[in-house]
Image (cartoon, rainbow, N blue to C red; front, top):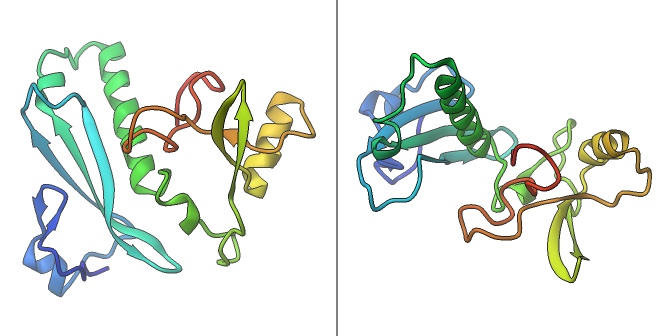
Length: 175
């Protein structure tokens, strides 16, 4: 898939000319970059740079902040696994698990989901809930609640977190 955007960068990465003219034989082309800034309060951040209707994200970037990695002992299996979980988490955002991308989700036959979310007050606070058929089927079985109307998303954290993660109180992990 060729990178066809007019912007020369995907996140922090200057897209190679070859990726624009010939492309790669891949479903998802990932660029990896890094910063080294103690003032940026993140270990990694990711997003897609090119989205093709009917296909989804084709190019994305994961950016690591070395300030939060440099002191990790990657020979320690626990620290290594923690970092792998972060990488998987960020790639999940590239694949479309974020507040801006949920409206772009499609059914298995390629048609858009009709109203994939709903809002509900939980303990007096408004929450966004995902209510696609597969999410509802899984959640109703998992929680043993056939009347569950959706799975709540995190309602705090600003633009990069709010409505882009499962509510941490619902699951052990937030994606």
